[in-house]
Length: 442
Image (cartoon, rainbow, N blue to C red):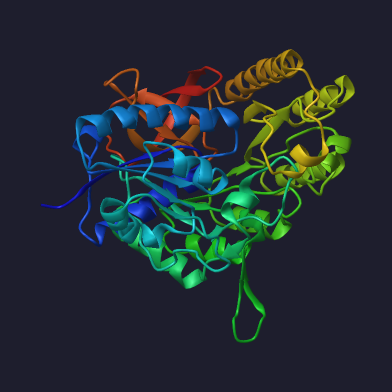
């Protein structure tokens, strides 16, 4: 009888993609995916270390897995990913954890599971300078079969002072472009209608010819190659970095209708003083120049962002600069967080976490309230306009409604007229909330 594996994924889209890679690796040696820990011979949790609350949630889940191990002897529990890399020794000592595997160790999981069953706890957190899992076609997880991720690179070289990612995912390396195109072609042949290209910083994608040493494919080149595979398949990408986003990428987006007109461009702060302390390598002025260029080349492009409230030494003036930047740019949406110190980062070593919690919370709430109002205004501007929407499935609020997204990544809800997931529909926007466009099919 085949062994059954349950995998639970936390964090970013990269972690989702990694979980799909893990399932392929285990599938090749006879494991099958199950949807409940009560059915699983192996329970894996793929983790995120970007913020402390994410780690606390995962530690709480280990208590749940402990109860399952008490019910059934022989169940193996493994912690994968960024948290495994950061907290390796601590996790290995946890009574419920049998396996600790970092992001570059997934090929070794079959042997680690076998050895854990035979000999006890196993750990592999070796970071690689070359591993991209380029030869592995991920086992897609999800019911719709409409959208899928392709990881085009791994790691990060930016070393932002607050960020743990370079320490948990290693240095930056790009996948060979032909392997990316092969994966994209496989998705298209299997009926997927949207492909998202993923990287910690996609704009720094570079494939260098190993023989000549010349850069033969940059991100704009890769984006165009994928877009040209099928004009009816949408292409998205994430995440961009303001210091690296080039006009070449913007012009590539403008040339191809199937490259979605949405850019996620994290700003983190509106204060150049804090941006320098964060080691972001751009200023407020440079960021606003990039926003202006996006609007110039792609007038209908939606822009979303990330921001941190209460970073080390943030003053009321710094916070006011973030507020004013939000008002000037008028983002379509934002991921907004208060600063969470991560052990081992430059910020944790050099800068005291000196903004009181209540001040962080108040500033975050002010940013959230402002962005919610701006998101509503931006969506209200869509009323009376028509958009092409890729149908993703039924709406969560009613089985008589469908949900899909525009090229600008805006969520649309509209009556079920017999359309299927993967179909395109033209809709008219009748009303909206700050998060959703309420539409009808035309």
